[in-house]
Length: 125
Image 1 (cartoon, one colour):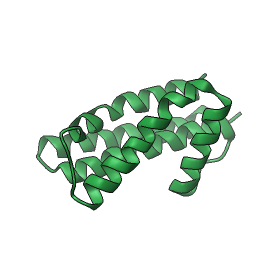
Image 2 (spheres, helix red, strand yellow):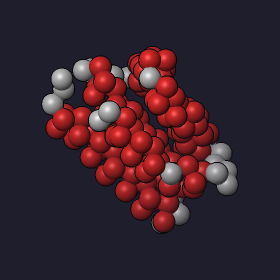
Image 3 (cartoon, helix red, strand yellow):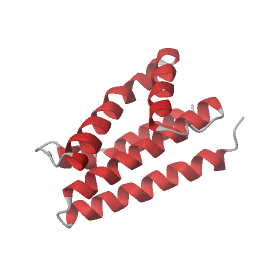
Image 4 (cartoon, rainbow, N blue to C red):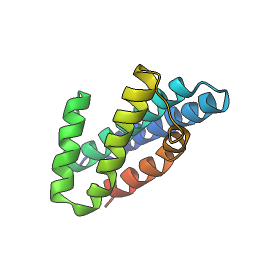
């Protein structure tokens, strides 16, 4: 079993980065807020994967593949999959890289806290 502090530290990092995202959103920098919310999502997903598999994914592609694999083994993890891909596509890709943010972007940024909490709950189950 992975020591709780190993993946707990990654969850703490995810929460810290999400706090930064909310601060950037409050200051009107939606693109930076979107990227920070995506980073928080990725860190939370990495922590879940570490808790469940014993290995932290080294790249985003591996994180995506491992999340998909976890969701096939555990139906509860499926609740994260759509939310994860929504954030990688809309927050990271569309808003941050392409500057195409929409009316759903602030909601996705804020609701990243729920994603982190759900991933942390799943890591402990």
